[in-house]
Structure formats: structure tokens, C-alpha cells
Image (cartoon, rainbow, N blue to C red; front, side):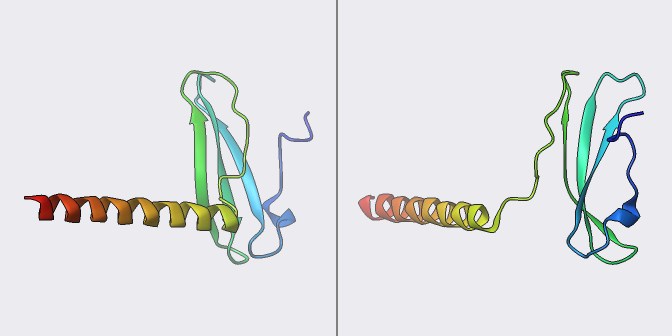
Length: 95
């Protein structure tokens, strides 16, 4: 009865279109969703999923980081790794 209760995968016509599929356990004690991306007319790719094991409601969010966010995370990881390597090199020379 809700406009959000059903959807047709054929409404997602272009490669790269995203869809969300909600799910629950049979006793409705856990709710979640998965995000899928249309790859071709018949192929879909799972982009991610989320659920709340407490049984509470869950806010549906885009599970794919934006390109700028992804670049920032990559740079932060690289910088952290570089500092760790420098620290390891420094302590190696201190011996």
C-alpha cells in the first residue's frame, strides 16, 4: 500500500543507475538494505549493505563514497602509512 513498498528493476534503465532493496528477518527483528548498481541490462553489482542488529530502524544512505571523499581517504591512508614507515626507519637507526 505504500509507494515505497515495490519497485520495478526495469525503471533503472542506464548503466550506473543505483537501486536500494530493503530486507528484514522473518520475525522482523532486524532491518537492513542493500545498494545495487545496474551494470548492463541483466547484470547488477552489489555496492554495499547495512543493517541494524538492535532491531531499530535504519536510515538509508548512499553506500558509495563520492570521488572526492574517496580521494581524501586514499591520501589520508597514504600519509599515515608514510609516517609509520618514517617512524619505523627512525627507530631502526636509533638502535
